[in-house]
Length: 77
Image (cartoon, rainbow, N blue to C red; front, side, top):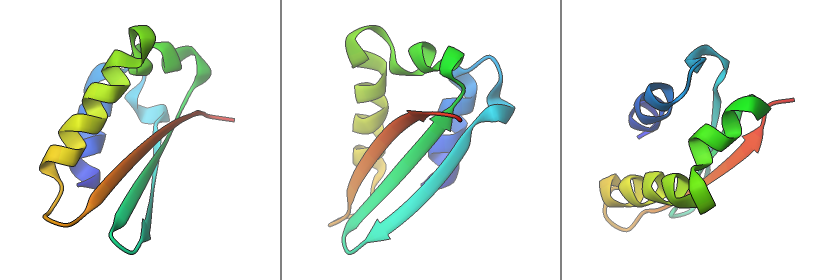
């Protein structure tokens, strides 16, 4: 799943090498935390968050049965 998320995110950004992805597993929940440069945040979130929500929906659809996915996008410090 991480590789799939990485593929999607790197295709959308101008500088894909600056992306950091962290995966946290707690029971049935898998949380991915994306850290991207502040100037790339708007490109990944999209207008009114539509692109970010679309990425979340694709990740939930691709998740194994009985698994829940969560995606957070944070600025890279």
